[in-house]
Image 1 (cartoon, rainbow, N blue to C red):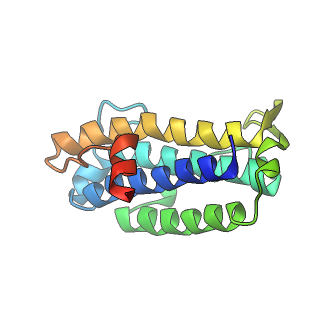
Image 2 (tube, rainbow, N blue to C red):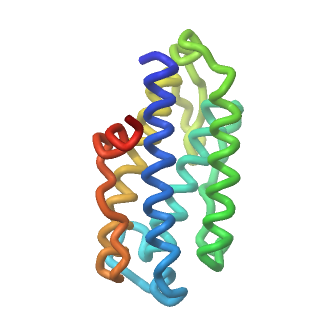
Length: 165
């Protein structure tokens, strides 16, 4: 996979995240934190997990830092604190990706997971995984948002591509 392909996936990820965040901005503070049948217990928990994994994969693959913990719900008492952090994270990811080349996408990344188990993986595979992982949890958030009357709408990759034309 070349840099342009990876950048397209990262752009899609940002687009889809923005749709989720726009929908989440419409729910009440109570709905944002209410217990829900989602993997991470609430809409907030699901969105924090999605942001946390994007942050940790950027740090591992582009900064060479392997954090031993994910972000916590308590770091984001309101939706606005979460949205602001997501904007900052998006800027950091784009800044790190901008100077990379096609050959950089084939670079082997050495990192440890949160349990300090070592792994090696090719950069483009990490970035593709990050986007795919986000798809799963955006889907969960989308179900909750729809139940709260604030559907994010269609998040399909093909819709993103068609909108770019």
